Length: 105
DNA sequence: CCCCTGACTGTCG
DNA sequence: CCGACAGCCAGGG
Image 1: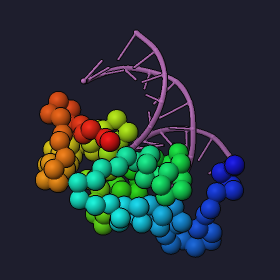
Image 2: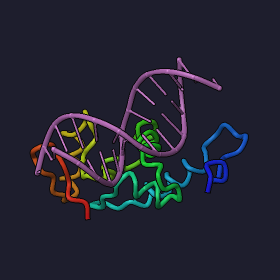
Image 3: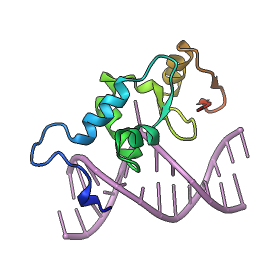
């Protein structure tokens, strides 16, 4: 499977298929639920696009529960670890103090 | 078309 | 358990 064969938005400059799929995955997240960037990408049908998910959240995260998304290592958002950790704890998720990580699964 | 950056990931010491 | 490195994909200048 080549890159060119993956689903694309086409000529439109609006939201890509990738963005719509990711948005749906993020939208269905429940309180107290945690997911990794890689899982979001794979669940959306775009395995290997973990970084793209991060970029998407950086741009449109304000419209989604971005705090329920962490790295595969349980790492929180660099620069926002404190706020991130607090939001997760507010949903009953334990966060280690050290570098601020969460137990995924 | 080339180069650089990044809210990532897996491996190594 | 934690920090450092290299690899990978897309987007933007």
